[in-house]
Every structure is written in C-alpha cells, then in structure tokens.
Image 1 (tube, rainbow, N blue to C red):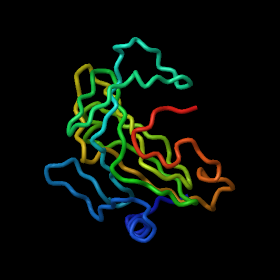
Image 2 (image 1 turned 90 degrees about the horizontal axis):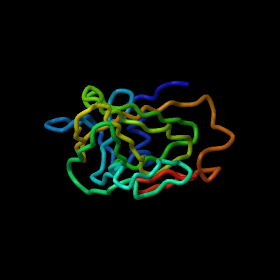
Image 3 (image 1 turned 60 degrees about the vertical axis):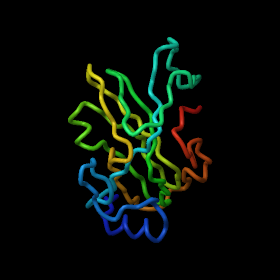
Image 4 (image 1 turned 120 degrees about the vertical axis):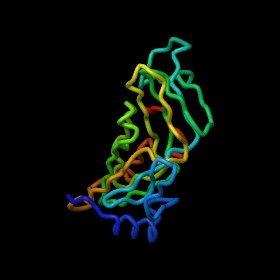
Length: 184
C-alpha cells in the first residue's frame, strides 16, 4: 500500500472528478489553508452545522438516534460548546476509486486549539460529501470557520481492487449530500 502524491490526486480530480470542487494548490491568505498538498488534500467545511445540545436530556444512542439532539445553524462561524461536539460536512464531494482507501486527519491549527476532527475512512467505491465530527476537548467555547480548511485527506492505494466495494454492498452512507446523522 502506498501513499498517493499530489500529481496522482490532481490527475484523478481533473480527469475523473475524484474531488469537486478541486483546488490545485494550497490556498492560504487569511484563511486556514485548504487545497492540494504534497501527499493529500485539505478539505473545507461547509456553512451548515449540527450542534449537539442536551436541552432535551436525551440519551445518545446510535441505534435510536434522535435528531432533537442537535440544533442546526447555517453560519460562517460555528461556536462549539465546551466539552461538546458538532457535525458538519465538506464543501468538496469525493468519488473514491475502487482500489483506494482514504483516511482523514485534522489540521494542526485546530488540533493545537483542542479541536479534534474525526472521520471514518472513505472506503473504495464510496462517493458523497463527507460528514465531519468536531470535538471541543477544552473547557471553553471553540470556533470553527466555514469555507476554510479543516482536515487533510490522505489517499492510500491498495495492492488490488477488493472483492466488494462500498458501492457494491450499497453502503448506508453512499451518496450523502448533507450532514448525515447516524444510521443503523
């Protein structure tokens, strides 16, 4: 298994639509950086956030998840309450090749502020917008900026195509378009 370079990511995005919209270089300025890097792609977060709330005193149950556990906000800056979390999605849509697995790591800018980004691997054949989970590990409110970089996606090429891809098994998160809550 090898990590795939900027040249491969650019080619697959331009020719096969692997990442759309695709930024061919790192964009910085006053933003938290996003776009193509040496061995990955820094994705941006969209402006819709589902902020966890305990106002209804619900139990968080992945088999019986209640949408009332979240408050939805469309905003350019999201405040994550202390010791809480928020769900969001990438601006970029991904279309993963059948012989590639993608892992995601949070950007150091957020990690150094106690904000952890969690994404499960993007499996071979999966496509859609990625649901992102941000955990605020601090005792203080923390801020996330929409339309800026939040996480780096790293592409790993397998030694061969698997027998069954995510698309082949009709995975439950295939083709998600918005922030997607847990499914069983």
